[in-house]
Image 1: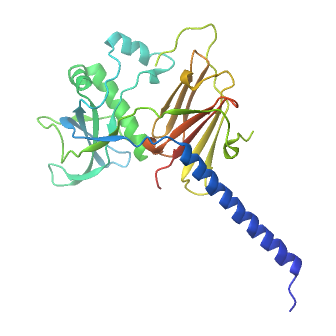
Image 2: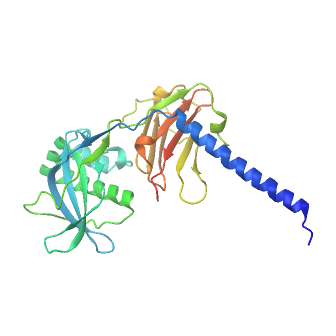
Image 3: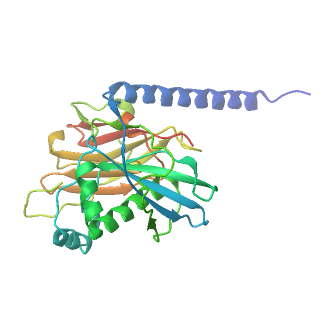
Length: 297
């Protein structure tokens, strides 16, 4: 039976185009990674026990949260109760952030001999004393801590919790690695690499209000669980990276363009590897490119 040479030729051309496309993607990824400053500077800390709370998941699984302390964790801004209440009642209660390190889950045994899961959360020692002695700050922090665990480990926790009496922690407390740099550096570029060409705190008072910039987030590979994400943010009013404040959370991008030019706060549907992420601002195109490796599925 004779074969259709035109069909074979078309199939070969398609395969060659797909191979070329994959090769271009790989080259672009290598180019991006080669331009990202090395940010994997971490320090190992040994948390000190504080207190332990008990709660449950939406599936009625027992969860214990060890609230630990360390001088290596930065403290949040010092606030009065009145100021905290004002922030919580404002339109943007997320403006007050508490630096914390969320540890990996570890299997433990509770007092009744049953299995359970424990998490260690480390905060600054001075702030720990504040939440220990102030009920309002303690309630606020535990709510924030639970939200952090829910976002990181994709679970739902009951807001009904109980502090264990005469017990500072459950199970074992493990060392944790923390980043020595809280924010990724923004490298300033004079020209845009062809692979990166776009496809389509407190801020000083000024006359105008900040606006939400246009942005795109692209996953590579586009199908399935991505290996990394690339965000491109258009900032036509920004002249230098020095006016940008970028904060990458595990699943969140927060960008401020000063003075009061831009404000972007967007959640992303994957957990990123913060210490390996990097950012570049091109002064010619006025585009900030953020490359974020993604945690494996």
